Length: 345
Image 1: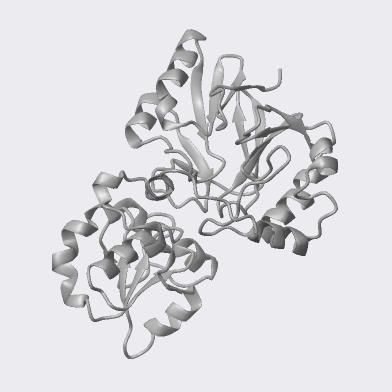
Image 2: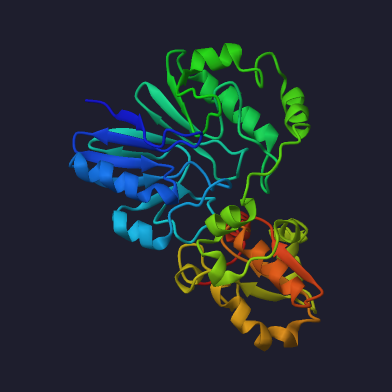
């Protein structure tokens, strides 16, 4: 039968409806178009089974918890996604099914650390990894132009020429391309070495999307701005980081730092566990707890979360409140666990 693919927004920002019979999945839904998606599903008698995200978006708000509950389908993202609102984390090479048809998950970092492409029979949904005649910017926190070049040239361009490309954005009214066309015509990659591509992406000088601070931080944290009171993006980016191995050595010293874990309670004792001695203060409670934490203001503090995004925002809030020595655990508990460092659950 195969998977049918349809774009729903009709704008520069793409949301795709995947269908097999009466089963459906949404790829990269935009929060303010929820009513449209519900109408389409209802009018066609479709049962929504999956919400698939290609990455953590910076140009629009992703579905909030209430919308997820209304749609009644699990949200799937790569395991590097920082948000606590993900129902199922995906790994490279994993296969999910829709109506018995396979959707392969390809981790293609570069635009963001959690970027993925979804490969189906005869097509690939590329998110912001590969665009028509372009590629997603790599100057947001966690961006990596070299990794993006490797993902596109080493994986996507190895697909058959006739593979249809469904990008996450297009600003010239185009809808699809093919792998063969992009391999031969895309100016970002055609006859470009990895070094040339990295230099090109570093020199783009693109303006940031409108409301990037709100979109990126809300999408990364899973909380609304009103619930947290986020600091500015520049403050978050300026927070110094500490690598897992360096932190482990420091914890064994005579003057260990305070570990402040800002995840949700279920994450604290979940699959990744937590670092021994951590103090749990969920991000949405941090502002209210600050007066009780001021006794640690002169102590070194390392903030921890799943992937390093929520903790960066929390660390910036602490610095704004007068905490002098704050670091972010680089890569969060994901990198701590990958380094085979001890955890408690």
